[in-house]
Length: 146
Image 1 (spheres, helix red, strand yellow):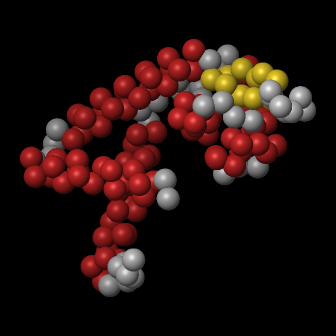
Image 2 (cartoon, one colour):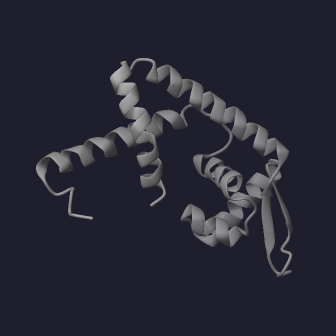
């Protein structure tokens, strides 16, 4: 791919995108269902929902935190009834973390609330802006997972 982001217009677009994504992210974080959970705890539950059961070490890598931090997060989530620990099928020294039905319901409620908020916000766009955003969504999704 050619070096696309080093001209003035592209650099300004990257800066604008960064700023907009950060602002939307902060505003979306305020649309939480359960205020007792930290953003990191919610992120771990989201990772479990997307990727399925995992060891604490795998979760730590996916969440970009140190393993001891993930062990504490998992313990907090377990105490709240949102995850369960089960023996690893191949390695008895390890545990596998799975989300509970309570966590699934909470995540669904949270997604619904955030989607409703974002839908209401998008209603302020005109048709051309909405079409541009719809076309950009898969590109933003790809960028988020690179």
